[in-house]
Image (spheres, rainbow, N blue to C red):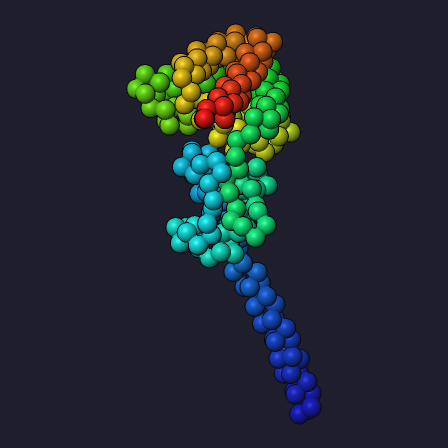
Amino acid sequence: MTKTNVKTTTKPNEKQPKRRRSVTALQRRALRVPRTGLHEHAAKKLRTLIVRGDLLPGEPLLEVNLSEALGISRTPLREALKQLAAEGLVELQLNRSAVVAPLRREELTELFEAVSGIERCAAELATIRMTAQDVERLEALQLRIERHHRRGELRDYFEVNQQIHGVIVGFARNSVLKASHDALLARVERARLFALSADGRWDESVREHRQILAALKARDAEQAGRLLAHHVRRTGEIVADTLTQKKATP
């Protein structure tokens, strides 16, 4: 009787340490999640600064200064810099500080050729697949950029301008197109803001957006695709020309 009682009471106790170890392992895995999110948060902050021109092309990214400004250690900061390097916004240098990737004419030409093709295809598909609510959304966004243009609010205009391009691609309802567009978006954003700052381009951009919207509303796939492709290529040309002029200036 006594031996039987001992056996029945020890079996559950023998399994208990295993359950504790399992819970501890799960807790440790859960605690790692914020550490992953930390470098992503830092990357998002730095991406915004680079795209908006607060960190200029070629500017050194000093780890000590950035760690202090972001309130993080160097480990997640380095992971953030690696992520931005993969996006083409940062260049890592051996035994030297990373730098904001310069704007190079040849690379920008290829970038805008690719984005032009993606957005042309998206516009053609969007004319077929847009709903009435989609059209209303585009009209509302157009009103907003017109208002920001009248008020001279370049940064606000830029934000809505980016939304319009993203929305048109989204209205194509093609996940492969959207993924391709998203992969290039940060590099394109930086160059677009640079182009809008050029003399006359802002006014020209507003007119082009009006024409694109009209073609989309008319469900003219060929015209909408052609106009949007031209709009994107034109932006790339202006950035490239501006860089050439600056390089030629003594």
